[in-house]
Image 1: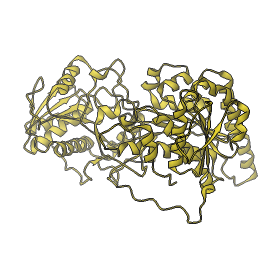
Image 2: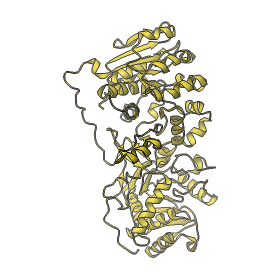
Image 3: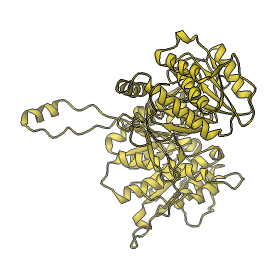
Image 4: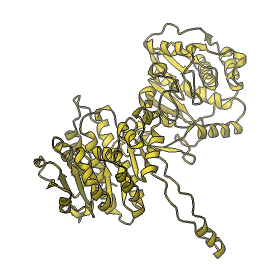
Length: 553
C-alpha cells in the first residue's frame, strides 16, 4: 500500500437521538459530486485507501475476535473498497479470504491498485465462501450506490452464502441489492436478492435509502466515515438533498425539559379539537384527544360522531356532533384540529366545513380516504394554502396510494418521491408513515431580494422567483412497536398538540414553517417513545399516548 492514511476521526456509529437532532442526507448524484471533488484534491488511489481503512476499522470494532474474514468483492469500486479493506485487515494479522467477481485487469483503475495492495499483503482469493465460525466476519463489497438492477447470478451465490453463515455481515456503503436513494430493492430484485447486514459503514455521505422503506432492516447498525474530508464526523450539510431527524453520532441521554413560564395558564398552550369517532370507532377519537392532552395542549375538545361515545378521560371536553351544524360547538376558527380518527364514511359530510373553517388542520385515516374519493374535497383542500390555511396529511402507504391514484407498492418503491408528490398535489405538509417516516412540504414562494435600484426592483416585480420546496426529512425514530391499532390516532393528536403550542408561542411565524416544524416534532416524540419502550409487552395505543413527553418547542 502506498501512502499513509490520514489521521482522520474513526468511523462514527449512528445513535438514536432523543432531542431530534438532524443530519444531512445526500442522493446518488450529489454523492458522486462529493466523491469526484475529493478525488481531484487527493493523490491517485488515496480516497479508496481511506475507504478501505474505514471498512477495516469498523470490521475490527464489530468482530474483534474474528480469525477469518471473507470479503465478497464486485466488479467496480465497491469491490475495490473491499479489496483495500482486506489489505489492511491482513496486515493486522487476520486471515482474509476474498472472492473477486471480475478479472483483475478489467477492474477500474483504483480497484486495480487495491487488488495489487491486497495481493502484496497476502490476501488469499477463493471461489466461494469459506467455512466460518460465529466470531468471524463477512464483508459485502459487491455493489455500491451506482447499482440499479438485481445482482447477477454470481453475486446471488455470494448473497445466499452470507445469509447462511453463522457470523455477522458488514456491508460497504450500502447493502448489495438495496437502492441507495429509495431504500427499496433494486429493480427486478427481492428480499432474497439483498444482503441483510448486521452493520453498514457508509462513506462520504449518508444515503437516504439506508433509513426508509427496507433500508433499516437491510442495513442494520449504520456507521459513517467522511474519509477525512470534513473536520467533524458529520457529512457536509451544504449539499444535502434531505435531512435525517432523530439520529446523532453520540448517545446523548434525554435531559429534563425546562418548565414553561411560571405565569403560564392553559390558554398559553393552545386549543385542540378532535373530530372523529364514528359508531364502532369511538376509541380512535379519544386516543387522539388523550395524546393531545399528554403532549401539552391547554384544552382538548373531542367532537364525536357517534351518538353514545362515552368518555374515558375526565380532562377531555366532549362535544356531540349529530350533524354538521353542531360543529359550532367547537372553537374551530381559533384551535388546531385533527379530523378523521375513526371518522368512518360520516367524516366526508363534515370535511367541507372543516376545510373552510380550520386555520390549522391535520387530516388522518378516514378523512384521507374521503378526500381520495371526492374530487370536490380535493379542490377545497388545494385552495386552503392560498388562504393561509395550513394542512398536514398523515397517510400510511395505502392511504397515500389512494390519494395519488397509485398502488401501495408504487408508493413504497420511492417513498420520498411519493411524499413530495402529495405535498405538491394538495399544497399540504405530508407525513408518509412507515419505516423511516417521511415529512415533505410543497414549494414555498420566496420574496424577491431587496434591489439596489429602481431598475432592479422593476425586474424583481416582473419575474417572480421560482418557488422552493424545503428539503424532505426522513425520521430515524420509531419501530415496529408502533404497528398496533390506534397508534396512528395517537400521532394525529400529538401532531395537533405540537402545532397548537408552536402557533401559540409564535403566532406571527410562517404558517407553513410552523406546520412543518410541528409535523417533524410530533413524529420524533411519537417514534422516540416507542424506541424507549422496553417492558417486553405490547405497546398499546393508550399506553403510548400516556407516555408521550410534553412538547418543548
